[in-house]
Image 1: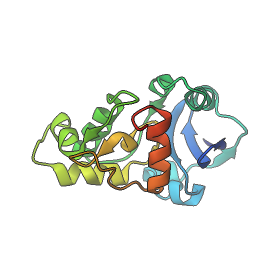
Image 2 (image 1 turned 120 degrees about the horizontal axis):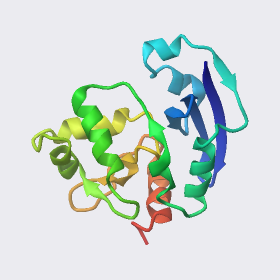
Image 3 (image 1 turned 90 degrees about the horizontal axis):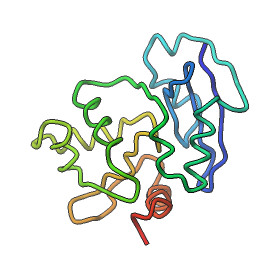
Amino acid sequence: MLSRSTIKTPIGTLHLISHDHQLLASGFSNFKELSSQLLSDDQKREFNDVKRIPIITDLLEDYLNGDLKALDGISVRQPGERFSQSAWKAMRKVSPGKTISYGELAKRAGSADAVRAAGSACARNLIALVVPCHRIVKTGGALGNYAYGLEVKEWLLRHEGALK
């Protein structure tokens, strides 16, 4: 059984889906949108709506309250090809308050020439905030795109101290 919960943030309601203590999806859209992108086995599971997901909700609240390293304590799993998995792992190594370019992400994920694939990995990231695709920007520092809108990306980067 999967757990579903929401958490209120200054930038909207964050929807969460987890299995045990592992986060499978988080985003500012809705449960239907997030559920449709889960692994097919997970899509077949029943959902249990809960007020809080142990550990995960606490760590997200800690992050929102200023403990920017709290997200590191959340275990994640999402479907994706090998390069996307490498890119998501590389994103999690970008410290709060820092940004890297899509080109640098491609390099860190194992293929410096795969800049477009790095951008696609950001676009397909199912675990917003925790897999911090908001820390990936265009060469030269322009913010680039963000699935939940540039104002959300800006808020997150400001919250983390990457933008003044």
